[in-house]
Length: 549
Ligand code: GBH
Image: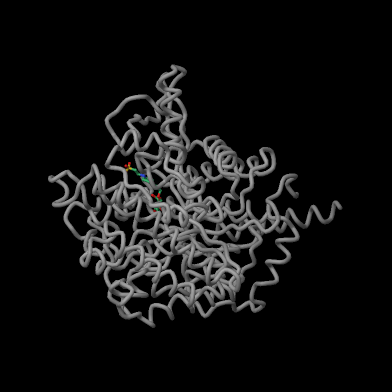
């Protein structure tokens, strides 16, 4: 049965990851350290003491991961490049590591051989440690802008003939605020001396934010000036931002919700400076920001503005939840707005995730999509959206793969996505659930699992969760049929799609009613059996339908 509403032509869907969260192999093939390598090993920085040395071992298991993606039948894969694999010390005069380039180049080739379009993030928080040590990383405008642009150039040169979608920087707000304001992310700077030995939370986040915008803009300018005409790709930035609802109907809380939103993604980005696209699209920082930050707010020169304005081909959206907003609170990084998920009557906004900041509220996703579309009139690429099931890490794998809260979340968000496209006429071009795999969840270590594939960190075996099956089926059913036919042709014909020996059924088609892979060869018998029974059942139903027709 074909759904009446479909996704638009050429819609891109797939799963997302980031280099530091999955690759491991920290000392292999000439990789230099990133700021997360040592930071994660400092006492108390990650919940479980976990670090990125092994992660999901994806640098070694890259072929298996691609076989897994292929077995899911995704059209695209969003991953990030580790800057310090490509340039171990990071700088524009430092040696380039050919082994690093070769890794990503063969990775892209293998994806394409499976008909999977690479969607590449240049920077997902893993600054080369060399640049932090040499000049303070993002705090040093002249150096970091040039070094980032140089790194981007090397990536465009090496991969741009095959990559059509580039993201410069993932969630600048996190680098600025969590890295240099709260000090909970690398490089771990803040004014709180009980937490961080150095930093100034009142100034550094805004400085860093400013420099990130500039670095992004210069990389985009370079792409447009030198590569776009031949490589024909799209390039932009991706921002985190969640929907905001007033806690109740009082005027001050209605205003607070609008403020929270404005700070996050709109008009008054004094808190989420970099999360705002206003500088990037509208070409100004709002006056309100200057009013609040005063001389703490860095400004762009005329020349800088001319590079920054219009420096994204699309709105890259990472979004997870909705916050109920109340006026007040001392937290400048949150726009002096208090967040809660508890309604005045004591009820919860939605199901609680494993992490405190996330509840399931799909209507907020639809409203956010509408808000962004009306505000910027730019095509939206949803580059992250996902849910961590409460307590999943404490469950045995057989139980963890039955991730019904995650399925419920994605049932809501996929419906919201479809309604935003077909009912509200919002121009949305992609959707990437976060994440392909359970992985290193930054300050949470490995305790929080966002994967649609379960990873057993002892054995590195992968087990598709039920949510993977739901998503694959949903996207397969909702793909526009012409697009599906065109993309199916890109797939490698052979049934022996990969040299992988560890993923069972690595070459199954994308049709969701066929079997999905199940971790490794021996897999989890329970899971394997379940897919098998379902496949048989679906075939049975299909046969009956065919007979009736
Ligand atoms: C994404 O950020 C990241 O891009 C991805 O790497 C990560 O794995 C994924 O989320 C899941 O977390 O309560 O002050 O600590 C999502 C945006 C912004 C959500 C910061 C969590 C915590 C704020 N994140 N927020 S705080």
